[in-house]
Length: 440
Image (cartoon, rainbow, N blue to C red; front, side, top):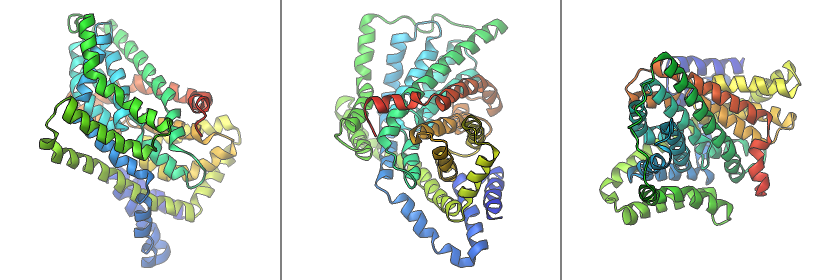
């Protein structure tokens, strides 16, 4: 009865378009009051405060701030110029540019919507000039932006490690490294899907390529573009190299990224950051506030799931359907794909990790693999209609409606699901790099 009330109230509020954090909070309060009266509210503030007062979660505001600084000083624009100089002249080169830049910026921002916003303003118009429709251009950027929560450093992996860490020992370092190959595979799948769409549109006469849009860059131009992009290209090596070299923790790495961004902006790119510092901190604070409000509200929701034995009962129900690992994993993938289409990744971790992690341990799945395949599921949700946040960001940039871009994204969803199945049933894709580098 409590489970029905909790999830029923939550999904009713979601379908009424109530924001996720408020939906989580109100549905939790309804259950607490109905079970224990007003006394049930006594623990709410403690749970919400404790959930965000964690050293590990300090990485989130700093990585967000680093991403805002990098975008402001023009790092994303320089990465785009470098990618265009290297492969932009090739047939379909703009597709390669889009995915490559998405991968690089993902290693800066750790966020899907932030990646779309940073690269979409330049690359969507460039794709349209190259012959692609606005819908296809927006769909590719929205899809590629989802790589932002898979490639390290990933805010999603940080939250997963915090939530799952209540049940099992798991490190952010291992999750970060485990996301590298899946993220690159996702990028490759999007390139293949985009070429398929191009060929299909050429046959229909929709695609009109302008081969003069991007001329082949000379060796000198490529070198100049490389030098200009160096500050951005160094970022993943500094962050990940520092973490895996044992110089600093992921939280400390986030602080280093902020300091690096300020130094690059002030002394290398000579941007007048002091003039824009207020706006930078406001933007970063707003983004951080959204994440932390969701975390605090979702923690109360997760508290009810755990203390009322809802997680155990739902786990038992899933296991009663089948004890075959293949069937269980397929069922969980379907569940997460549907959930990801309606709720954000952070909320999904707090709701589903307490329910699904015991099942994963029962079928002897490596928790690292579970973290990666759950994150990939939720990354797909970022560009899945009707609520995929990346779609709305890309639709706004491309000046197209959400229905058109939702149609355009279908080939990319299919490509992503193929990668998801590979990650689910071939654990070595996720564990190869962490095991190779002996990262526990």
